[in-house]
Image (cartoon, rainbow, N blue to C red; front, top):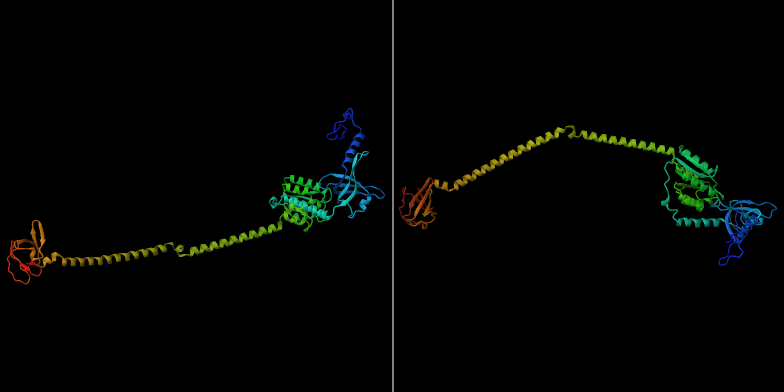
Length: 452
């Protein structure tokens, strides 16, 4: 680009004669600047532009109509001129607030230093196209996750200060303030009156939303507007407003239109209210209902406490009426008597057992005594033993004591030493003589023993 603002084509060499330098000593005149700007704008050519009509100046008898075309999402506008017949012949009546797409060429008026768009075609944006654009924006925001329920912030149960963004002296403002204060008289409001339709609505609402979001005293923000057409509610489906609602740190309630209305702000807000009145009911509790609930809970708690005390009183009375608590020593006395009875029974059983066993022992002793050797000897029997050295053998047969054997004869009161003189078998009468130190004795032929 040269110093005077003329562009230099790529690949071309600089002109031999350079343009005059621009400085304080060599300034450009206004006409040069204006002409150069006009040349640059003229190079832009014809373009299509979309915007919202904010002003129409159509005077009878004039050959030019003047319009102001504004960007609905930014505080920027552009002057538009056209043939009045374009406005009169429009299939849809054009008015302030209409969305249009125009085709024309920018012109720079060097005399006044202004830019204007001279259009030769105006196409109103119909309801179907608006709805299609809203659907495309809805799909875009949904794909970015701006409708995710996890992003929703909880609405405080009892906000101290409520921020309200609505139209000035509107029915929505009156409904929210009246219903909320009737339900909870102590609630405070920070009201920001803005345009809620038209080209200035979005910038004003963005400014009010940012101011309320910065205020630490505001606990929740309500966007409220009454019902209207799709064009009237279009600012609440604006992309910039939807992103600002998601980026806010304060919970936001969207109360736009009536129940069937569903702008995109309802989907990105933390809470959607069907109407402004519904929003007032959902952001503050009903004081009368809460007091009634408190009274009911207090009555239920008192009834529950009284019932519990009565049940515990009856339980204590039943415990006190039991014999073990009425006479604590009664059971001990009964158990003492039972122990004594058991002791007596045990002693009686032990005595009986001892007597029985003593009698049996005595009988056994008598039997043993009766069949024992001493009893036999006391009846006149004797035990004859043959003495062989130090050994003694009981004589059971005549063969055990041949003649000449030394014998020891045991009687009841002692023993007699004798010698065998001979033997006599049973059935034969053989007379023998025994030599003993104490005198002769009588021999029992049945037992083989000598009988005294």
